[in-house]
Length: 185
Image (cartoon, rainbow, N blue to C red; front, side):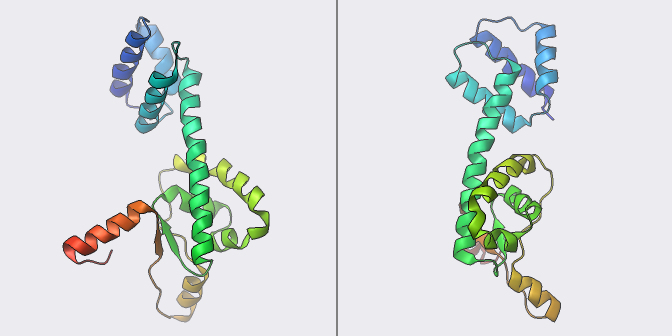
């Protein structure tokens, strides 16, 4: 839920920028319309509106600004997942630096199903891009996606290997921990 003081401060600034008076009624109407946004989404929308709008924005303009951002994120997240699937396959467990990918793929049938859907990539991508923005708003996500080897090894009591880390943020984090503290994450 959008922080009211963050909203008020930035909304007053937008009003000044567009020569509009920020009355209590106007501020209240906008806040009620936009309180479903997170603080980060609101900041993103403000930045986009300030740099692209020529006229005072309506509440729908704020919401559209974050939808455009979510669509772009969904496309990039899907490409990251497909690349990881091609590189590591359905046997390896994977951990993405974007946990919303875990929730999205889990909802689509899991990592193994995702990797094996090579023939229906077009439909898979559409489904991923629909689900991903919803999962971005979800509070909790799986820590990683288990691969087929992990599932089999768990049943037979064999050693389970760590998931492959996918994404620059996780790889940088792992490198930093190794270099600074000599710890395996």
